[in-house]
Length: 294
Ligand code: GRG
Image (cartoon, rainbow, N blue to C red; front, side, top):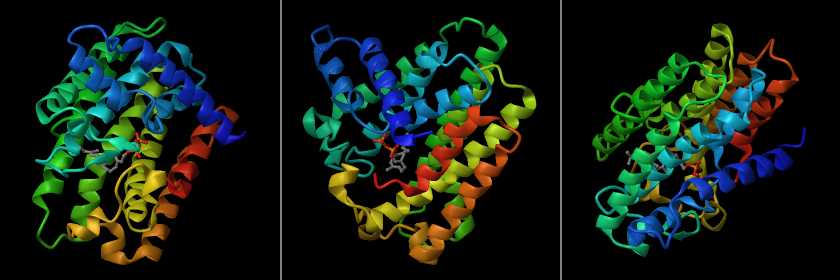
């Protein structure tokens, strides 16, 4: 398979659905809808929704029916970026190659745009899905809430903030990465596998795949902050060093950080042993996680 073609086809599907599912900019409350669209529409790689669809494909599921759930993942991710960029957190000016939400609008509007995206996500995730039992659907909504919340992304972000300006050991950094970034990636994979009709054993394997690529993704993010091109990334680089943050490269050097990420990719691919070629998109996506330049 050609991953570039696959990614652009899936991204187009997700982009079109997000555009359809998001209130029009001329509909009230216009300023809120414009702020949401500024951050959500036509931006980002759409990795999390693409993982939902690829995991469903791996277990032979119907991917079309999972589009609203896949979009929910992107809504949560985009809300986290909007709030992370606020002056109270990372205070960033640039995101996805354009001004951050609070720069383009104002802080209060950016907070509300994030809140609205988070609630919209659960409205989308809770929609009935043809061919999927209500209990499976509910289980994945609960899983998503856990992974996005206190015991996942939000908790990880809090730990990340608390770890600033003090010595952080590798084990703690790994814990932060797994929660802040990894949990939502794992949730995307699990949701695709479960809602796509996978068996318990398939869901478990894809969950472990998601955990491995989730950590590899954040290690790569740490690496790109050092060696990446801010134009390609669409955000400022060098932020971690500027804020004296513990990262994989700062704790073990760039070379070893790259090796760690590569090992995780290998581990992720091995979780898919026994899956047919329907899991090739997941296999290719694992390598893309560390090979990416943005
Ligand atoms: C504010 C509740 C709250 C959480 C913030 C995930 C996160 C927690 C903040 C985002 C800040 C950040 C740069 C995290 C590193 C990993 C990450 C999520 C990078 C951006 O994800 P990509 O590369 O972005 O998938 P695109 O723009 O392609 O969607």
